[in-house]
Length: 110
Length: 116
Image 1 (cartoon, rainbow over the protein chains, first blue to last red):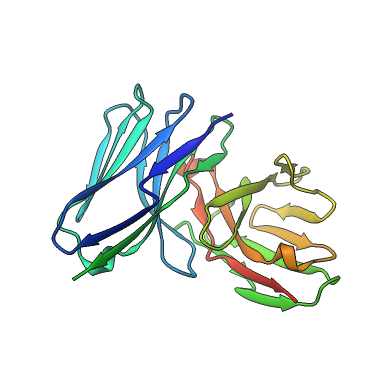
Image 2: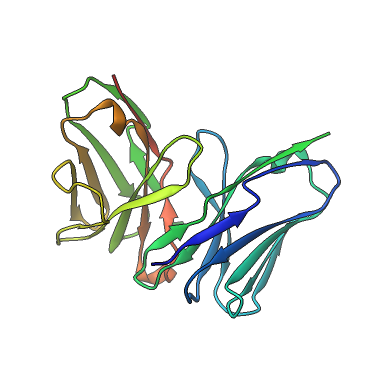
């Protein structure tokens, strides 16, 4: 059974700082997704990572995938308050089903 | 493109009644739709997968008689929570997928259900 773990679960960081969120999964998968969720809202797609070594960047966020290590990272550069949200990674289980990570609640303060 | 809507966005019902939630793909035909449930401050849990014209596939632990899913057309799937109880209160999110966009799922805005 595919398990997806994220850490940290909660992250409080100062504006301007850098940090990385980690997503580990237990079985082989070729597709990994990152989403953002604001309170009371649904999911916003951030990144789709489809191959080993894939790296994608959008603004202050950069995501990477290492399929051999079964690890994806979401790196935040020079955080700003607008990035405050909950971030989920999700792994395709191979049956077209997404298994979501536990989520990382990010708070950016001045 | 790839917009998914849900209706209603929020609903309050009394215990014992049934509630229907609609999920529509607005600008594409969705061969597969998924239903998720999310409790406060928790992750999304897949409830079931539905393919147009066939019975839904439910995840382990999800009562198919309680959560009725119908995928009658390529643009509409419905989730009916039958005989709702307070423990069914949750945020229900659907997603849709179609071959032209690979394997990515497009998520609806969610429906918040409160059972009193």
